[in-house]
Length: 492
Image 1: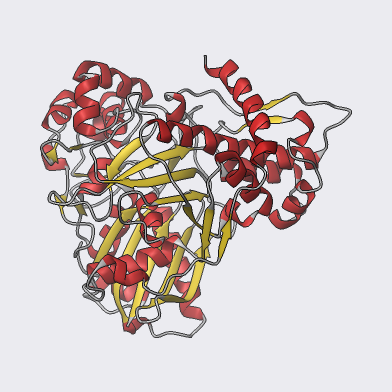
Image 2: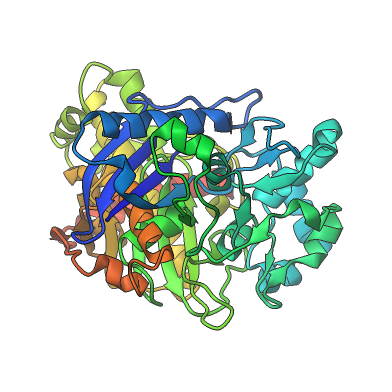
C-alpha cells in the first residue's frame, strides 16, 4: 500500500511515495531545484503565490512518476505538511484573492501587539498561549484594515496546506492544531476564541470546518485525479504545519520529547502536556498533531527566522561556485570562534524570540587584514548555533529541559561544523535520523486513513543513525558569551 506525502516549503515543494509496510520512501523529489522566490513588495513584507505551491507540487509528483518505479493508482492516502502561519484567502468560487502573506512577514506586528494589550496580556497568554503577534489572525486583521475590498470577498481563511488540500479535493477544512498556529484557538474553552474574533471583527463563517489532524479532509476530485494521474476518491487524511509534522516524523509524540530542524528557518519543538506559555511570548505554544480535548499534547516552538536562509544568502554572495559541502569544509579550516568574527543571523523579518524586534543581520568585529571567506562561513554557522542556544535558554526558563534533541540529517544538520557548534553551545546531545517532512506527511496520511492503528506504529522501524555528544563546551561557552554581549547591545 502506497502513501503520498507533500511538503509545502518556503524554498521548494517536496514529495515522497512511501511504502506503508516498510515505512520507507520508494522515491522522493523536490521542485524547483533552485529556491523559490519570496516576494517583498515593501521592507519586512514576505509573500508567495499559492498557485506556485500547487504547480510545484504537481511538478515534484511528475518527477516521481517519470521514474516509473511505482503505480500511481496504488496510492491509498495523501498527507500534507506546510509552511506555518501563512494567510491564504479564497472567494466563494475557491479563487485566490491575493498572494499569501507568509510566516516571516512582519507587517502585522503592530496590530498584534495592540491586540495583545487591548485584549489583555493575561487573557492572551492563558487562553491563546501566545501573543497575537504577527500570526495568521493578525495578518487577516491587516487585510481587513488595509485591503477592505479584498476582505469583503473572503469566503474562507486558510493556511497553506489547506489550500493544497482544496486543490486536491475541492473541500476546505481546518483543525485545532491549524487554528492554534494562527492564534485563533482558546485552549481554556477548547473552542474558537470568541474574544479574539470579536476584537478583530471577524465573521466565524470564514473559518473552515474543524476536523482532527488525522482524519478525512476530503477526497481527491475527478478533475484533480485526471490532472495528476491518481484514482479519484483517495482521502487526504492528514494536514499539519511543517514543525509539528517534523516532530511527528521524528516520533516526537509524548511530553518531554524534543525535535529540531534548521532549514529556511530554525526550530526547536518540544512536547508538553501542560497549557504552558512564555510570559513574553518569545516562544510559542500550539496544539500538536495528536492534541485532543481529552489528552493535551502541546508543542512549544522556538523559531529563528534566519538560519538556512542566512547560510543560503552567504553562499549566494560569497560561494556561488562551490557546493554547501565544500563551503563547510572551507569553514572547518578556521579555529573555533572564527578569530573574533561574530554573526547575528536575524535578517529575515521580526524575530519572536527577540520580542518581535526587527534588528537585521550583523557581522561584528570584521578585520580586513585577517578575516577571509572561511571565517565568514564559520562565523555564520556558529552564529546560527548560538541563536539556537539563546532560544533554548528561554525554553529552559519555561521548564523545558531536553536530555537529547532529535533531528533529521538534512539542511544545516548535514554540516559537521554546525553540529559541533550546536551540541557544544547548547550542551545537549543530538540524535540524527534519516528524516524528511514529505515522508512524515505520508506516514501521517497512513495514520489518518487507519492503515496504522496508533501514531507510534507508523515509526516502529525508525532508528537513529548517529549520536553526537558535547565534547567542547568549555571552548564554545566563552565565545557564546561574547556573541551574547554583541546581541544584547542590539536589543537592550
